[in-house]
Every structure is written in C-alpha cells, then in structure tokens.
Image 1: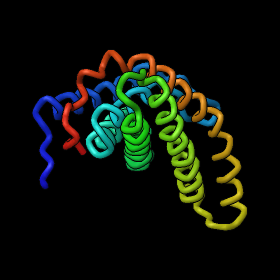
Image 2: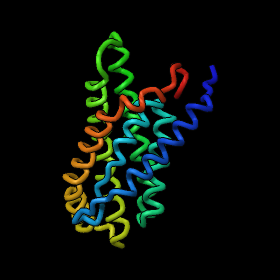
Image 3: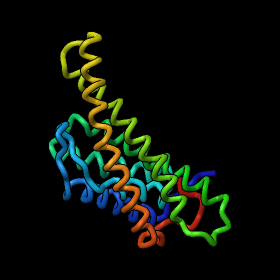
Length: 190
C-alpha cells in the first residue's frame, strides 16, 4: 500500500523544518568546546511526534543541517542531518508506541517526556560519535593517542548536549498542545 502525504502535512512539515532552523540559528549559546546550545531540539522532537518517523525525521534533519550550513558549521551539516533525523525518528516511534497503548483520554505529557528522553539520548550519543570521528579525522593522525584525545574532548561535549536535550524536552512538551492540530489524522503518514 502506497502512503501519500497530503499537501497540508507536507506544508506543515516544511514549516517545522523552517522552525527548527530558526530555533537553532537565532538563539545560540556558545559552549567552551566550540559548539553551541540552542532550543531547536524542541522542534526536532515535535517534528517526529507530529509527522511520524520519516516525514518528521526529514523535517528535523533538514532544518538542523541548514542551520549548520548557514551558521558556519559546514563540516557538521551531514552528521547533524543524520543525528537529528534519528532523534526525531526515535521520538516518533516511542511516542506512537506509548500513545497506542493509552486510551486517548490522557495527556500527552508523559509520552512527550519519554519519547523526548529516548530521542535526546540518540542525539547525545550521535554527537559523541560524530565528534570522535571529526576530531580524529581532522587531527591528521590516526594513532591511539589521537583517538584518545578525540574521545576525551568528545566526552567534554556531553554535559552541553544534555542541557540542550533537556531544554528541548521541556520546551517541546510545553508547546506541543499548540501544534497538535497539525498532525495528520491518518496513520498513513510515515
């Protein structure tokens, strides 16, 4: 059975890619590790929860990667696309699993928080791996010493990514009721 995305869903997902880009780009808090913390993860999570694993993952990945491309983090953009796609994808799957077992009369707060935790765990681990890859590759040396240095510097990023993830969960859970009406009403959305 072929799944078709409605014009409304496509437009809404594109809007979420744009909102993800804006929320990632406009308010950046630089970190000592040369990265930055932003509120874009709220829209990454919402993209997955509202539009499903594939459509939501694409919106989240595109918006986040575009923020890196235009924000001076070009080398990170392909990795960001993958990490944020997987973050939204994971959040969508967990949200659907939890809400499918609820009777529909309960609030979405618990499913949002739990799916956010799962999604943001993927983000933290994804950026840990990405940072190890990029630091090792750009060091020009593939020795055990350069790998050890890459791991140590990558671990230093974890607290900042945790703050970003927690902020995304809190904001995403808070504003989800505002955007709930954009979610497709059929299960056909990927």
